[in-house]
Image (cartoon, rainbow, N blue to C red; front, side, top):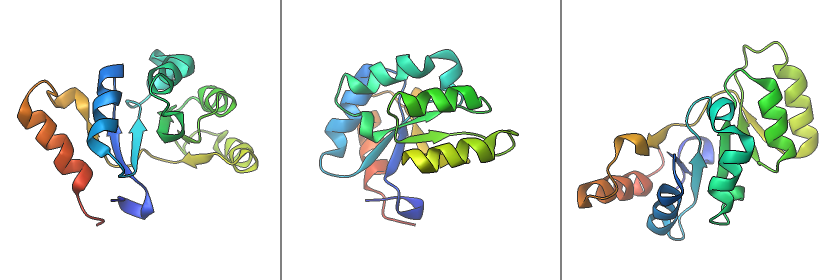
Length: 139
């Protein structure tokens, strides 16, 4: 099922195991693997790419660059198909033009997402919570 604006349900992932569990739970359903807010600054473009690429899921990944246009541009060069950048950044319009020319979706805010930092996937109720999130109908 897809969430708001025809986008897949998003899940904030922090570790390789979480990526694997999300992909397994999603099955054939579309899903977006979102980084934590501002993750481009602390895990880095290369770090988040490695996390999702280890599972062949770069095409599902959205990297949050917060207010760092340089990180957003680096994410585009690294092959991310979607990047979050605050529209309050003075360079937003320029980055948006580059994104458009590159076929990258530049998002002014992260989509609604389930943050797995708050879900214990080692417990059955955590897995059920993830499954429920992924199964929610379109709003």
